[in-house]
View 1: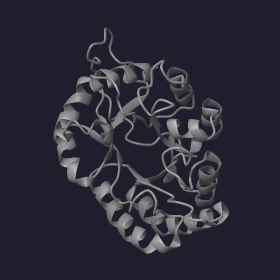
View 2: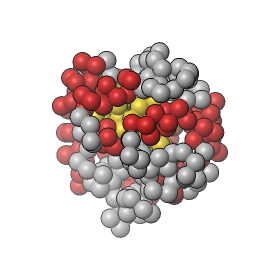
View 3: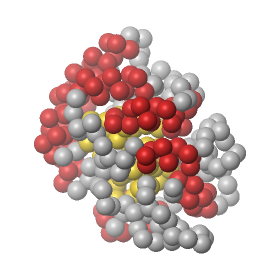
View 4: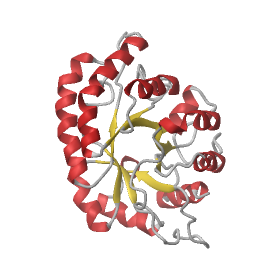
Length: 277
């Protein structure tokens, strides 16, 4: 249904990962979430990612796009249209504000030459999940036509409600997939966050194989703790990334862990190597 999303040829450089002995294979386009490297300016982070052999940063808003463009770095997942993570499309009381914000932001994303724009279900607030599904469908349909006309992909993130985001509604793949089916658009998909979905439901590789056509973007982090993705946590990221590639995915996988190590760039370098299958 969706295939790969994002800019098919952007975000990857024919460079060596710093400290590595071989160049990156580059079969899977990688990015890093801007918020996980708050100790670096956007300018510094652009230099960091290019030094590691890729050129994409997730969750960057319009105010920083000129810096990315100056470095030849892609905004692989744009943000800034959302109200917050709690007040989303499941709440009809937020629809008018969200429609105004997203209509404006879709134009900003398209005019900048980018593709992906994040959105959120918001919290349940006592709502039945079925009602939340109807509400989200109705709200998103108000902006989806505009996104289609401008070539922008709306991407709803799956988040866990057990540890990090209590009461978040889109906390399981089945709910998100059903929303995709109801909307039936090539310009709406899911951000399958591997960390969050391991906490909520596990069965990561089987889920990717079953529902990959609805997964427009991926995020990583170690479980438990949301830290580095090496062998001190429970997920086998090389195997997961091979499964993603086997689906024909051509979009982005973004590293979204919070580094614990004294050298966070070394942690990012190792994560990129692990996912470079």
